[in-house]
Image (tube, rainbow, N blue to C red; front, side, top):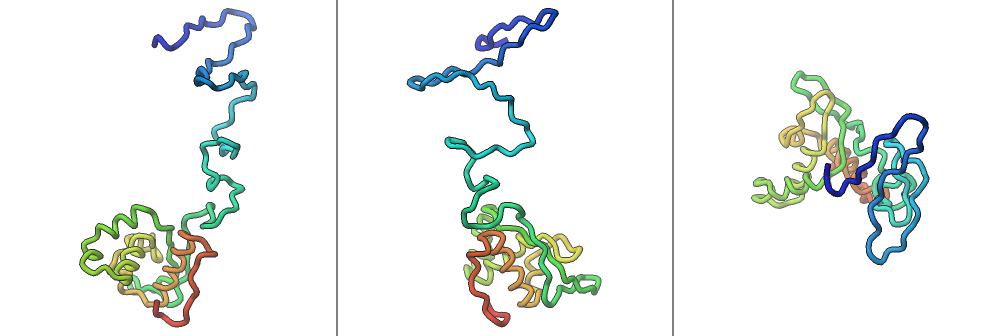
Length: 179
């Protein structure tokens, strides 16, 4: 046993009330408060946002701030043209996820982007990381993104942008395949 752990004798027979577990001593200058008699919160319930809570308000279920919805970080997209799979079938559905800091770091360290730091290379690398599948095809590469029709690329870009930054921050959609 550690010298910091108090010796608590085991309970003897009968219905002897158990003492609450030891509480850390209050910090210097803090007012002392009686120990709480509330039961311990269950592990399955999310922490409730309270004043002074270490949980950021953005993760609260009632958060009304800007940005993406916190319910999902993936979305299924219907491709307007479709992607031809190696077996000749046409895949019309793709799954995308939100951009992470690891994606940004990967692109920043990419030799391809460092040789040609332009928007097209950036977006192609980003889609190769954030498109998690096209039809049954799960290993989406830069070459796969390069083979896609421009309308499909645009649809995927908008979906990734919406998941990452929120619906209210989408840029104006321009007609045509350019971007």
